[in-house]
Image (cartoon, rainbow, N blue to C red; front, top):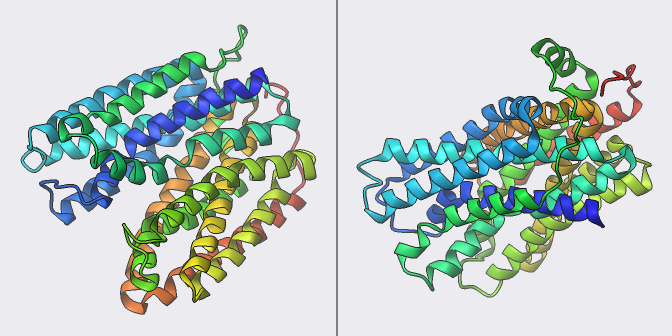
Length: 401
């Protein structure tokens, strides 16, 4: 129970940082009266996503070198300061005039959010045996990953009840929540292993046990962000599910439930059904993902589409938790779990950024019938690569890991 509470605290820290980083996308999706054109807003959001993708590996290395708890504490404090500064710009109505500052501050918040996953992987790798890592990675993901989905309904609900002067500083409050959760989380071992040198990281990154999960988490990222980036428009234009409609709240609840349950179920599946092996569990999740995407694209009834959306989100989020959490702990061990988790997280978000652009261009040309048709091959490739990883012969383990 004590171990689970420690992981839950890390998950809350990840949730707080994710909510802070998701404040600007949520404000845009909620139709907030921002003095920014769509082009500028898209540029700021894209810069934030790519900042997180490129910074994740660097953040993971810093976590291993300077300590997970210290890195997570400093990242939470930095995110709170950046969110407060961004709130002041919005409060003064100067976001259009100072667009460069808005883009930089949002990118900073995304950079600080990149520390959450590697810090959790580093701390859990040092205190958990391999047989428990899947369920703890799932617990962390179930708490931290829904931040992107929760930011929008939270913004809508609070925006209708609070004045703008209070609303603009809520992202800073979310980052402060993360800072408080850090002190409730587990402490690092007294004799903590030193972080790996640059040469060791190069060797580790070239191992098949890291390269194949990187390809897998890239497939999951393409599906995850392809869903998050375009599902609202798809439901609105194809099934007429819009804010205020009867199925709008169920649609949000379905996606959020998938984001919570998918990581937890994926971690338990890996630990219980496959004795700590990650590849077979990833294969099951990718196979279900392909079926859910097929059902989502062919659904004729709005309620059916909502149900398949939740299943698709659950599998995409579940694969990400399994790989960037449990598989990173297994491959990186006590010394390098943060760096491996950061590398996998960076590939995941980079693939997501490309997926959003690819899906948008193809939907413009071929209509919504091409949306899931673009995402299904990623899930099928992920299933095939998972089988390859399961058959891959394990390399000699580094005794320092």
